[in-house]
Image 1 (cartoon, one colour):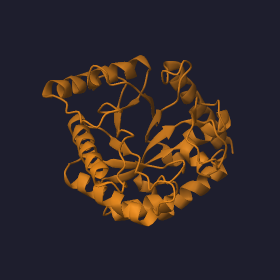
Image 2 (cartoon, helix red, strand yellow):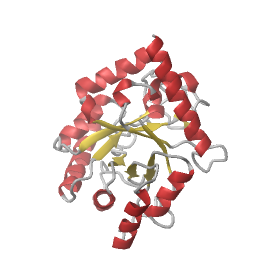
Image 3 (cartoon, one colour):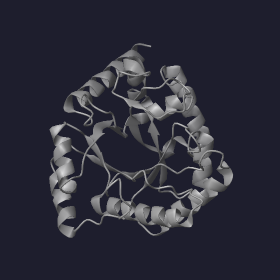
Length: 289
């Protein structure tokens, strides 16, 4: 498992690698554009070359690009869908240029009271077009906590989104531990996590699980509220985080922390070190079971 953190890309993608190295991260995640603006960001040849040079010989072995939260591929508003499409294409093309492991996407929202079926169809159309207008870089749909009309709160919805997008081989899933708990999956025990992943295997395909977010949850099981807590300090606790980190089917995946950190400026080297220790603890406990 490649354990790392979401980091700032300020100054260019090579600086994001440097921030990952400072944290002893094996994986990093970035936004490839300003998360508060629609304008897509295109990297120059020099920035791309600088990124690859920074990666070479570093402790960072995987990059995830998180599509910005403004995107709503399921929106009923054609203008928002068009902007979402342009931004997603830009992210996928950036991912291809940088050799990213994947782009991670929140699939969208039907809004409160909206029907999921038509929203899934709209999102699938946008996702399929974005894949057709880009090459190589995978796209991982992130499971959601389930607040309001967000799509992807269940493996049934994730499977329906993939089908609506044409089932492309580049489509995968990013599983977020906080979102799993908040959407009703009790993953605090090995048995509970296994049951959830068995559903995923049946409905989505376990081979589609390609990346992970480790976040503790400030809100309880089934709350449908997306509130991240630092590792071991929420409803998952040390025990639940250790279970998630030691799951055998997650063995080779990048796992990124999106936690607030001790001063709300994001994960630190100490947070990543604690996460590695919890993984080792979980592996030891599974070996003894």
